[in-house]
Image (cartoon, rainbow, N blue to C red; front, side):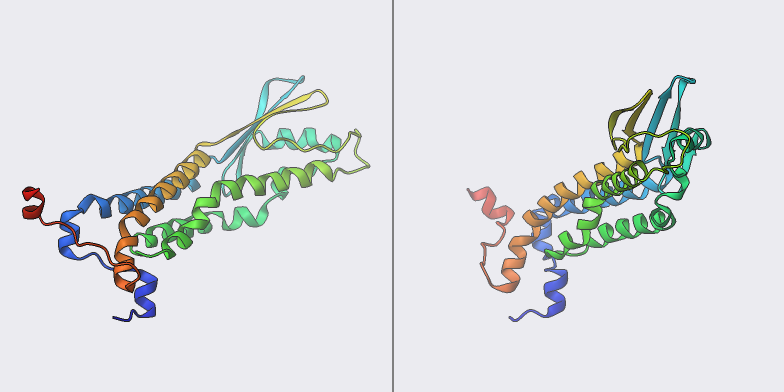
Length: 232
């Protein structure tokens, strides 16, 4: 039987007897993708990244905490130090990203949740942005650190060589030392990516045979009945 475009998009539905025979095969990808969506939706409420600056005049160090929408911590003090070397204020970086961050993450979580109901390879397409979200976040952060560290004001009171603070780990600039680390939000986004990857594996394992049956590409044997299984 010829399949419609909509059937190819959403994929095959699971027959009741097949669902009864292999319930957990179909339930597992649903649970994994749902857990990924929940983990992802928590990130706007959690810090994504931390940077601690150690300077001689601040024995306890200064810390900047980046959320998706704003910065917290000793931002004014760090901006004061950066002013002397000609670096622009931290709050002027990633303005667009902070403005749309929450909406973007909510959209990613909704796409992951929608993939639960898609039983074709389009589920991978829907979840790909969320899968890549942690890497994209770090890449965007690296871009702004590069832009701010390599475009210093030449008329600043102190002249230093352009530098790029590390996104993660320790860096040294003159007598200053920075230590950057992931925030809990980034850990949750990474957990979501891991759950998506595992979920897509089980998704393909569950629905690919049904898709082959639907399209007639490679028919497979029907699920054994309890009576047949007991007769073996």
